[in-house]
Length: 307
Image 1 (tube, rainbow, N blue to C red):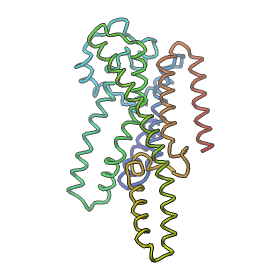
Image 2 (tube, rainbow, N blue to C red):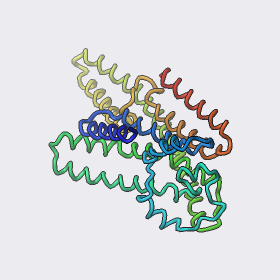
Image 3 (cartoon, one colour):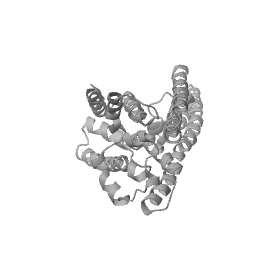
Image 4 (spheres, rainbow, N blue to C red):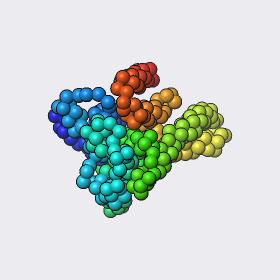
């Protein structure tokens, strides 16, 4: 049943991308399954059937022993000393036998790198078939939303693994040191993502206010034929705001009537950072893990209901 559910969402996503539809529902299903697949890492006992059912969805976080083997064997080799082993048995059971960032994230990083190769291929096909509307819709997705989608896809797992490795920082061996310092770089880069969205969200709010004023001026100028030139100037400025990076990529699929709606992505990232910290730092405190998860879920429900 789980596999059929995934195939249905995948098929809907491919069809919607070709047709130019919004794929917010498909992405949200993927993001939900990513959290579900990491629940076995929590420090509590569960029946084996439940564990394997939840672990079945680990591919939504990019888990693939085959795809990650090259990067894992090239960088980490077999240098896994005792003190770098998984801090709790649930990590090892869930497929994280140690705390090395590169070793655990190799599959996800490889998938993201391979996925990036699709972009030039789609661009070449678009140049060959410029009048094909479905190909144009696919090119629109890959040119505008692909980078954001890949970032959101990898954000949860990479954040959790980076925090886990940083918490057990140890540079004594080549592999351990490389993964430990890489985890610091990953934390810095992933931490810059919310700051990036905050900056562009504030800038976008200013642009929306400016856009509203320009449209009002255009309506006033439209009533006077002598101000036709000023009207065109206002309309051109409004067109620039509607077609810039923020309007067409970062906040394209969000309602712009309220900052809390088009800045939902900031709460989305904060929620995943909170979940990653719960997994990485509270692996011996199941009661606090439940409390933290309950708080995050409660705030998320209130956020969706209120805004």
